[in-house]
Image (tube, rainbow, N blue to C red; front, top):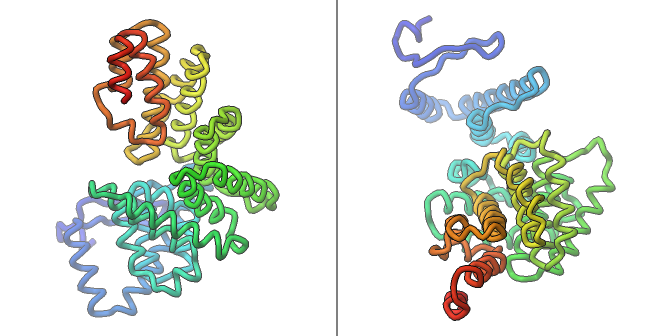
Length: 362
């Protein structure tokens, strides 16, 4: 072909019966910007066609091959839908896999959704919540202070729940409801968070099975409801939610949520002194990849608490010290700081003096 003869193609492959030629990114960007400037209406239509072509290919891949399209291709699909201003498709794609993309590509998601008109955000509450969530992830990726963005995300989700809860689809109810629940939990309103979460569980259980929500979205919600139960001292109800997440593991794409559930179960068993079960859940959780999101950080804290208590039971001072990073205060800033503090106290009572332990805890 002319492209091959020009030497511009970096590689060429096929997607089914369709030949795909790949140009260097700089060439692609230059050609796209020139075309978009010269023919904006045609460019918008082309973006729409590309987004729907990618969407159809994604569905074919899942149906015929039983595997999803890789995340980078899905992000490109989403960006094309936004550039084409195909808002129904944007909303559809976000409902299907947008939350997972936002965790991986926060800055790109923020840039894509920032162009959404206000009327679109009003018509599609999930996109308003998605934009607020993308601001949080973008700040985290950039190493900036993300607390203010998180508070705005919680406020946005709470506002949507207050004004439009009855109109939300089951997937939106779980995702936006999780944001509201986290906001309640973050401000210490654990009882309200549990009541709200339980109400959502009841509503989801009563929906038509044909409108089944994805395991990842259900797991995301259950993870935060389980943590609300755990922080309120109810390890039984917390364990039930984490066990339910574990039951979805064969269908789930988000390994980090499955890992988080397993590590939280390991921590619960360790705190109860069930060390055989602790070891079992630690080994199960380690089969799944973690990540660098706040969920991954909490999962790491739970793993360290469980492993530390396990090594303390074996009277292994050095291993317990290494597991918990006892010289670092970083983990104590997480919601699980009471459990970290408990392990540090146990470590001090085993291997230090009571006075030095009290001084550290103070």
